[in-house]
Every structure is written in structure tokens, then in C-alpha cells.
Image 1 (cartoon, rainbow, N blue to C red):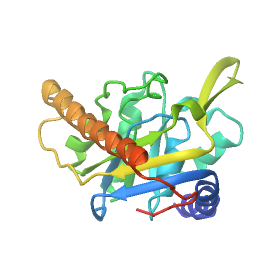
Image 2: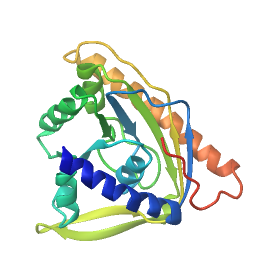
Image 3: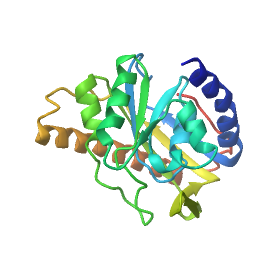
Image 4: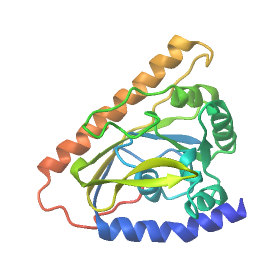
Length: 232
């Protein structure tokens, strides 16, 4: 844990400096984040979202991230040493179990319920059930987060990772609006599959509504300043 905290505090100023100079950040909160274990759940318009959202939180969070990023030289090593959670194809339950351990310790976990980058043409993917299973199994509140950015500024970058061609969709500069909702609490049997599906859909509904708020704020907020930043 000591090494993870050291890496977190070392990297946080770097990311915050980047977001403060390269992005036009506009952050709106519906309320304070609750103390203790919590699940941050956001939409996922770009590959860079985990880093930008994590930079907004005042304390360390542990992110469920597609395993492919753990295979990227230097970045993968950083993710591993920082304690983030690799989500490997076919091993989703292992990732959820690791996340539940963090939640049992009162930590913050971040998840992107769509499970992949949102459609580049617009809209959202249907939520996968991981966020619901985490919420029901842990009792931790879900904090929905809605992101809006300019899709035309997303750069699709081709790379080869361990012999496979992969594409990252990086947002390097431009407006980045975030709306943070109030905590959502769920109860029920994690083995009740229709209920789990309903909870996942409910979380995604809140995320979509918050994303639309972020979008509306962008079109109705003239003269946003580069670097406008408010930590959560």
C-alpha cells in the first residue's frame, strides 16, 4: 500500500497540471462525496477518462481497466504498481473480487459500466452488470458521473501490443465537462439476475442524464476558461 500511495501522490500533480493546461475543465457536483467505500461509475467517451476522472478525486481510487493497457510498456507497469485492477477477457469475476476487497477496506473503486469506449458516432453502450454486482455485494454507494467532450477532437491512435493491433481513442485537449451525481444505494440478492440487470440499467440511466447535463452546460456556458478545475 505504501508504494501505491507514493505513486498516486507522485502522479496526481502531473495529471492535474495536464488537465489544467490542455483541457477546458468544467466540473459540477451535486453534493459532497460520502466518506468510506464508494463506487465511481462514469460513461467512457475516450481512453483518457480514467486518468482525468481520477485526478478530480481528493483521495486515491482504484480503477477497473481493460487488460490491454496493462500490456503497454511503462504505462502497464505504472498501472500495476498503482494497484489498479486489470479486467481480462473471460476473467471478469476475478476483477470484481479484487474490487470488492478494496471496497471492504473502505477504499474507492472506479468503473466504466459500458465496458468499452462509448460509440464514436455518439450515444452509449448498454451497461454491463459489473457495477450492479459490486454495489449489491458490497453495499457501497454508486456515484454516477456524466462526461461530455467534443468527439471530433478524439484521436484514434493505432499501436501494436504483444503482436496485436489495438486502437486507443485519446482526448488530448479541448472542453471536458463532468457532472457528478448524488450517491445511489442499492440492495438485493446479487444472484437475482433480473434485479442485477435492473440495477445496472438504473445506474446507466443516471450516468446518461448527467452526461446530457454536461453537454447542455457546454452549449450554454460561454467563455469557459482553460484550466477551470474543481477537485471532488
